[in-house]
Amino acid sequence: DTGVSQDPRHKITKRGQNVTFRCDPISEHNRLYWYRQTLGQGPEFLTYFQNEAQLEKSRLLSDRFSAERPKGSFSTLEIQRTEQGDSAMYLCASSFPSPGELFFGEGSRLTVL
Amino acid sequence: QQQVKQSPQSLIVQKGGISIINCAYENTAFDYFPWYQQFPGKGPALLIAIRPDVSEKKEGRFTISFNKSAKQFSLHIMDSQPGDSATYFCAASVGDSSYKLIFGSGTRLLVRP
Image (cartoon, rainbow over all chains, first blue to last red; front, side, top):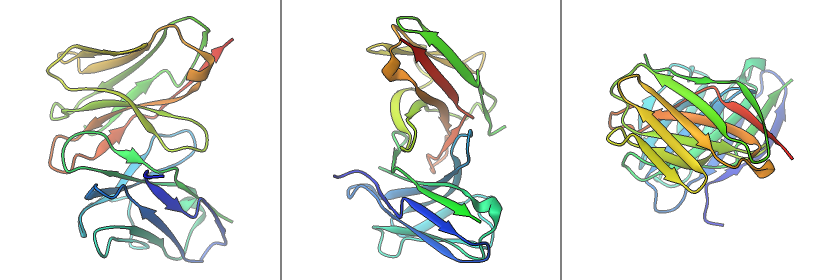
């Protein structure tokens, strides 16, 4: 499968714990995006990378959130001290650096108890 | 000004009928307008997209109509099928070098057999 891969698909955690999600983009794509999707809503932009550089962060990305793409390949999204409001689907997408299709993974669903 | 407003929230259509979903935007810098289809438990997948230099684009049963002066665009699904039952999101690309997408809130389509 050469699509965007996300892991884990589901994560249940207790409030206050840290969680980390991983995204493996399509190998030829040098752009990688993270989005958050809550039930019944469209995906909301969180951040994006071109190669290893994080070029933009949404104000939705509080200080408890950090994203990295250390070698310009896979990316991780860490949420520290999780809150119930963090419960959502976290979607990763990748693309070429031009206006066009974003290819999404199947997402990592986070439930904070 | 960055918002994309989508309607209706939900839509029920008989098999063989026409499904119509509408979106409106304010930011005239938007320069790429895709529609994404999302099935439960899956990430969004590109269905069809249009750029503002054309007023209509058709791919099979799916057509985008674009009205630049009204800042509106719509998705028409002809001969709707039960397999089209999914959530549809309109989106717009910001028009800067980020190429990030701003999504509408989604339309849940149910096609009855």
